[in-house]
Each structure stands twice: as structure tokens, then as C-alpha cells.
Image (cartoon, rainbow, N blue to C red; front, side):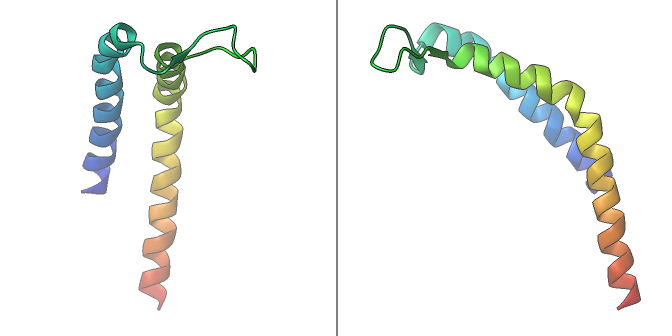
Length: 80
């Protein structure tokens, strides 16, 4: 089930963020604009886009890493 459910979970997370982008942009609740006492600006919409830009190309690496970890865990249980 891992081989099927892990990619489904990744696609669900990416899809949820993508669908939520329009609401995040319209809502503007988590937006901190300058000037403030820290002279810091943050926009949750652009942070979400950044997460997508990292998450999508990084997901094959995460999947292969988890396959390796799964193989190690299953090998240890067979030995014991």
C-alpha cells in the first residue's frame, strides 16, 4: 500500500495547496506588510508558491528516500 499511498498523499497535498492559492490571495489574513517595527514583510500567498516550487521537484527524492528507509526497516524485521 505504501507504493500507492505515498504518491497519492503527495499529490493530494500539492493539489490542496494549489486549490487554496486563490483563497489565500483573496483572504490576505497572513500578510504582514512593511513598515512595521521589524521592517519585515511576509506574504503567505508567495510562501505557498515557494513551497510548491520546492515540493514538486523534491517529491521524487522524498519518495526514493522513503523506499530506502522502508527497505531497511523490513530487512531488519526479517533478521530478528
